[in-house]
Amino acid sequence: MQTELEFYQLTAVGDRELNQDCMAHRVCADYAVFVVADGLGGHHGGEKASRFFCRGLLLLAGVYQEKIKTQGPPAVKDWVRAATEKMRELFADDPAMRNAHTTCAILYMDRTQVITAHCGDSRIYRLNAREVLWRTRDHSVIQELFDEGLIGERDMGVHPDQHRLMRSINALVEPWVDIQTFPPMQGGETFILCSDGFWEAIKEQELLLLAQPDSGKIELKKMAQMMILRAGGRSDNVTVQWVRKKY
Image 1: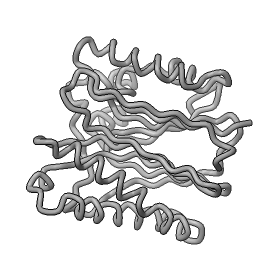
Image 2: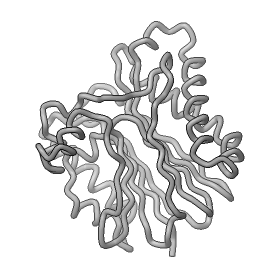
Image 3: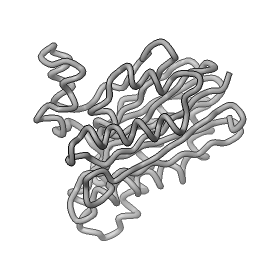
Image 4: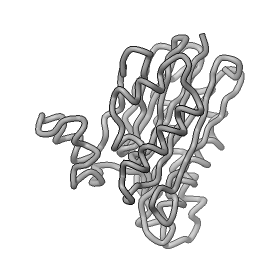
């Protein structure tokens, strides 16, 4: 996969005092994994939750990649559970652990399949140059309002209940993630993984700009800066990963 993928990532604190987002990746010869996590919790708890979860996921990637080859999504579920257990170990006796939560958006790929796993409102988009093919469904109050036809896609990022989550990952609770399996990436396709600080102000046409053949690091940076400016001094942390399979 190292010669087949092009990828970029960035994170910014926005207008917050602390960046509680975390991102990580591993790209090997026969598989790749990317993850974005958005922490929630005071006294640095959210910062630790997102960082410890990402660390645990990557530490265990090699073990579970072998299992994914034969077991598919059930092995991904076990992988997330094991990463949550590692997260608990890393918290040790820190009392912040009880109220520390994180979202996650995980993209795993090898030459035969793409698997996504997510919890909360950090998103994964799959795009080609013409359209947004698919995105993860948020575990949030506003996603339920959208599903019921009460608000539109553009309303989701500015709704007063935008930060009310129905699910998140905590080191003391069994993780509950949605897992999807897809055919392998096609040449020219793009995946975007991001925290809500990135997607809440973006328009579909702007997402498609990131999927054009000549787009890349410069366009990604400009888009992230635009999302911060649009927040008008109230920007959340902004984290985004851009992954494309070369033609």
